Image (cartoon, rainbow, N blue to C red; front, side, top):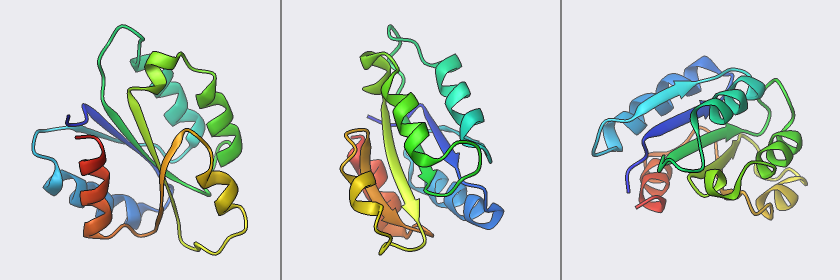
Amino acid sequence: MEPKATFILIDNPVDVIIHKFMLGNELKTPADIFHFKDTRQGLKHIEATHQPETKNKTVVILDMYTPGMDLHEFLERFGMLDEKIKNQIKIFVVATLLNNPEINKIASNPHVNMFLSKPLSEKNIIDIVSSIN
C-alpha cells in the first residue's frame, strides 16, 4: 500500500527539501508531496481532499512545533474526523529534541503512529514507507 499523498507539516525549509527528496527516492510509485508551513492549512487540506468513501492512503509528517495550531490541538481536531478518513492517514511526529517531557503524552496518542527524531534519517523514511505497506 503506497501513499497517494504525503503531507509535510514542517516550517523549516531545509528539512522540507531534505524530506521531500528522501521520500521521493523511497516511494515506489509516484506520490503527491504537499508542504504546509501551517498546521491549520494542512488540516484544512486533509478535510477538503479526504472523504469516507475514498481509499486515499496518506502519510502526514508533522513537526512537533509547526506554526498554526499546536500539536495537541491538531491531534484533537484530527480525532474528530470520520473514522474512515482517520484510517486512511498515518501520522508521524518529528522533533529535534526527543527528551522533551511531552513526548510520552504525544506518543501515547492513538492517532500518532510513530515519533521520530528530526531531521529524518534514511532508515526513518524507509520505516515510514514500510509502515503503510
